[in-house]
Amino acid sequence: MRTPERQFSTQSLVGIPTGILGGPVFANVAAKWVHSGPVGVLFDAAALEPSLEETNRARAQLTPAPQPSLTAVLTTILLPLALMMSRSLADAFPSGAKFSEKA
Image (cartoon, rainbow, N blue to C red):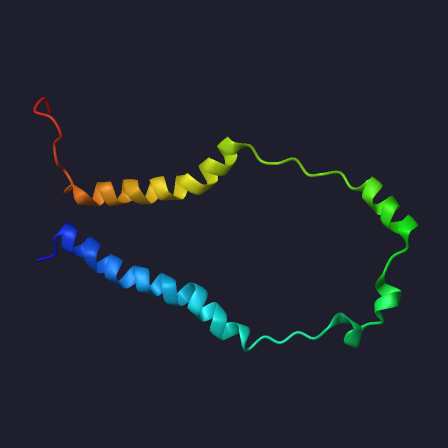
């Protein structure tokens, strides 16, 4: 029979090694497949460099984008987690279960 403790331990035994292999280990393997040459081989590097005047003009036109608020960031990160946890909590109780004696 599947108990929550056994299910959690099984998920941890599978999930943690998968995360390790899927992240840094795969990045090292994939880095061998991706080759990039120097920019000068494809383009004339001197023609691509803007003049000092063009650079200063471009910097003057740029305005920094406003940073999102901490509330927006935390909501974006934590809302999916809260929804998944609430779904798991709802699945833990059988349908039609009564939570108080008054019902």
